[in-house]
Length: 333
Image (cartoon, rainbow, N blue to C red):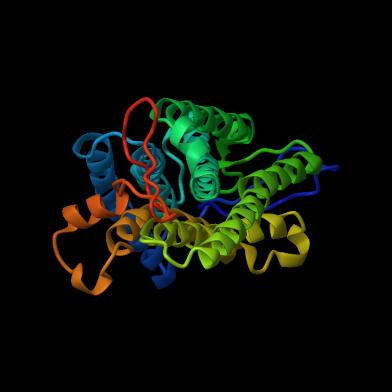
């Protein structure tokens, strides 16, 4: 949540930054309170999802996806207080390791979340289009392998935070700054472009293609028994899109700092806060996007379980998809 001043890289390879000011105005206090709320709700909600999907429900392909997504969101929310303290104090007091690690967790959450949403979309598409193949090939073991690969790839794509994040004393104040130390402007462009293309644009193109296929199939198959998981998937993806889009827009604007320097300080804080909010919203989507929304005003545990669990039938009437190894039912679209 720091505010960074981008220099002329050609004349001065050392990035001069300004630390966030002490949190005294109403807007800063409000955003700090919002982040505290995100921390509390995100940790509690995602911990509940982890408990339900990991311990209370029988293991299945569907719970494997949502459990991994909840773990990603929980990790991010758990470390959010470090950024809150930084924004309030205007001083990074946690050292170099945590400066790198907190940024790493942010992008690990971003990449793993969007990749898991892509996998969920492709999974629904496969169940709808080729249910017989899904019956034989859609197994918990393969889902676990896919999730492991997602985490490995996400970690690799998040390594620029480890490479470029740095801590140094402020050049005018007795404080420490946690900032991005790019030696060349081209490095900044490469990192931002990679995050935007691989962490946002390309995944959403894949998701849109899956959506078109699923919607066309649903129109043909008007007798689909349940569209609840499709609604949950839609809510998760739309929420991710609107929470992370401002973050990427601000990151792209930072590449032309001179033009947008008047709005970037506010934009940076707004973008990071909105991106952080995504990690606490998913548990509520699990709870409230199930069937009979108006009647689900109580029993949070049962609502979340109903939203996550496998229903045992595909959207194609008369087909019940089970995994070949575990004998578990798959979810409907």
